[in-house]
Image (cartoon, rainbow, N blue to C red; front, side, top):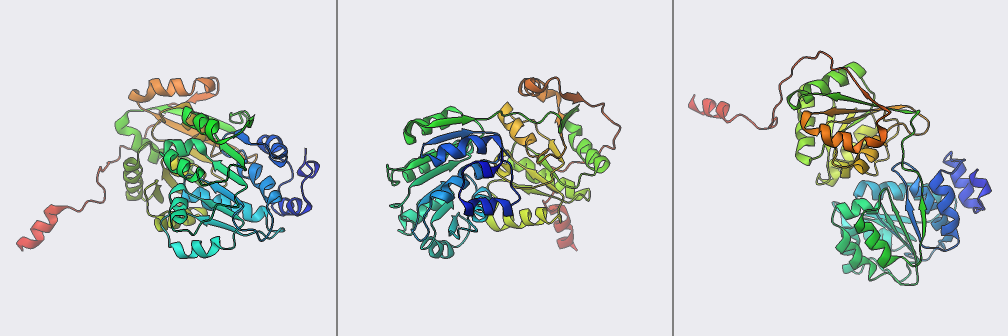
Length: 390
């Protein structure tokens, strides 16, 4: 099937053509007609499956030019909010709609000015609430209410904020919820917010022919040395290295820099300007590797990532699938490599059960044992004392 077979408005078809999109993905093919018909829709599909286009196309068709605040889209992170806004701007380019993204860490005033003309609002829960309290974000005209990456918002503790926002959204609306997984918290939101929703579920599996999954059994104390060895040997142009905790991402990135490897840490509490600078450098290939947490990496729209490294093994299968789903996209091959310590072998076996016939255990190579600094940025007080003694 092609988009031109889906009874879309000419303005939207022209925009999709300019974007180079010809064939809809599974979630797009199933969700777009239901949203066009006015149903509340619950879409479950893996990361990278095209969910933004799935809800973006029909909502752009429904929006009327010149009517303020008809659509509100809530996303868990600033990066995802910006990316959704960017994608919908491209879909609506021919129709010439105004889209305003709102998120914390930046000045209120440009966002407030943009809201006066924007038909579509994309934002994070905290900043949306702040703008509502200030009277700068009016919800009276909202006809479509979208929650994207709902499972991540549950994980990040945004339920209360979303509930507060929803109370001010007109009940006579269309509700759309998209998520990679459906934990109890998301199901609870669906039951309260949506009315007789149509559920669209596409297969959450990795393309077996494009993605190779490898793992090494390695001592915890030797993980860093192996990671450096693999980056040097495989020399990927662009890669994501996953850790479970914010502090670990920071320390690992600093230790990689000490070894002359261009890497930066990306995590949820990083300042907005710093996050944007890091992502800009990554897009422009000025840094090659991002060391990231699950939450920070969700929604990242970065093409041509050839390698995923699980420096820490995730806590569940959903996180593992979302991590490895960042590579082997758009018909390109990719490799996911997990460094499994003895303490992680049981959980790794459990979460990769569905991939047991595709996992390749790699022979541990010989590599140099490198020093690891737990506080690589801490200055030595001893040197300071010596200097003062002189």
